Length: 238
Image 1 (tube, rainbow, N blue to C red):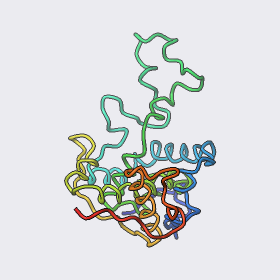
Image 2 (tube, helix red, strand yellow):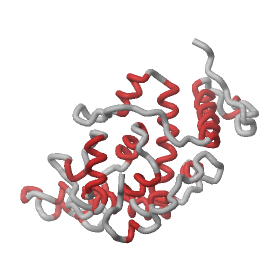
Image 3 (cartoon, rainbow, N blue to C red):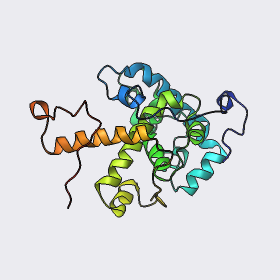
Image 4 (cartoon, rainbow, N blue to C red):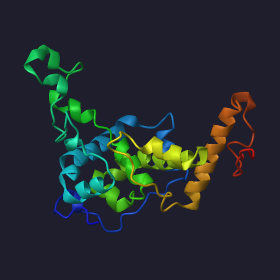
């Protein structure tokens, strides 16, 4: 699928786009869960991705065709409150019955960004992951040049969540978890694609921490090897 068929700033740097080294200690997922993660710096990159998705990507033929194939509505298709762009007015700011003062943002800023800020990118990241369409090229086409810094951490975490979902329950329940609304059911599920050994080991380590949580093996009860050993705790056989 050819994304960025139109020339422009986000068509630059398309050659050689590849995954970040997901699962390594220096990757974004670890920074995102670190208490010292710089959320304000990340947020600027995230807003750039959201603006690109709303202003450019959702109006392009490649993104629209893939969204239709994967059975997920783009923001401009959602009724009764479509989001046409990052400058779409907030529903609270619309309508004469609301009165002028009712539409004012509580902490200042523009009224026009309210609805766009309410548009989550997570459903689109999740749908791309579970259908095997979360390649760097497609993520770039959806979220622009800043996708690694802006949504890369969310993408890595959601890939891990998909691994956990598959390990936790049956195919049917996993599908139900990713179906969204009755009109936007996921048409198919694919095993996670382009997985590295490092990413699998990081997921195993996180899964071991979750199993320890289930057993209340926390704080003074935490296994001494939890943060030092590559071995993982295995679930008991059923």
